[in-house]
Amino acid sequence: MAAFALCWQQVFFWVLSDPDTRQWGSLIGSALLLTGLIMMMLSHRTGGNRQGGGAP
Image 1 (cartoon, helix red, strand yellow):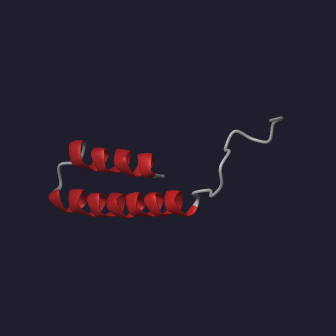
Image 2 (cartoon, one colour):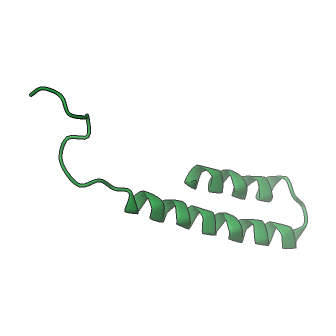
């Protein structure tokens, strides 16, 4: 989601020439980026081995 938000912001910055549309696109992209970062923080796993359960 964070990568999509960054792409969204770039499209609205480089492609569109209307200042109002750019502003709303940037605001929506920032909200998506924040949502993606929150999702990454909430999905952080606690514990040691992330490789899976194998033989020691």
